[in-house]
Amino acid sequence: MSAKSALTQAAGRLRVAELSAKIFGNTFNPTGARTGNYILRQGFRGELMMRYYPPAQDVNKTKVSKLGQQLGERLYNPDEIDRLNVLERRKARGKGAPKKGQGKRALLAKKKKRQ
Image 1 (cartoon, helix red, strand yellow):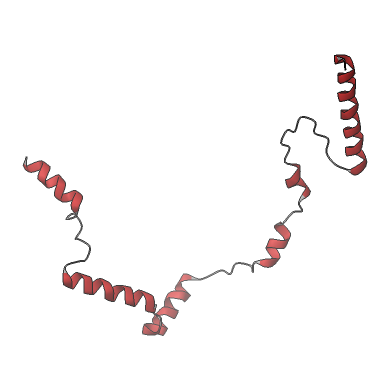
Image 2 (cartoon, one colour; image 1 turned 90 degrees about the horizontal axis):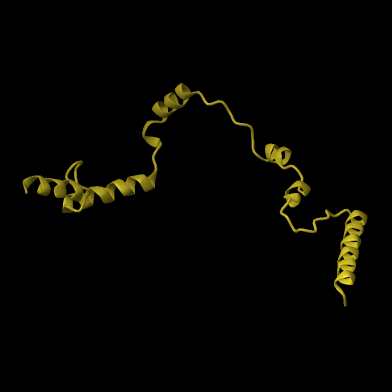
C-alpha cells in the first residue's frame, strides 16, 4: 500500500463520517476536541426548578422576635441542652475549654517572653 492510497482512504473515511453525522444529526468532530455539545443537548432546568421550590416568603424580624417572646420557654432544642449539660460537667472536672488567652499557644508565648 502506497502513501497516496493511504491518504485517499483516510480522506474517504472522513468524508463518510461527515456524511453519517449529517444524516443522523450528530456533530462531526474529526479531531475529538471538547465542544460541550452534551450540555447544549440537555434541556433547560430553570423552569422546572422554579416550580419545585416554593416562593420565598418575606419574613418580618419583629414578628419573629415577638413570637419568641410569646412562646417563651417552649422553644428549645433538646440536643443543645444536652450539649450544654455535657460542657458544664466537663468544666466541673477541669476538662473544659480554657479561658480566652490561656490556651497552649498563649502559654508558649509567655514562656518565650520569660527567656
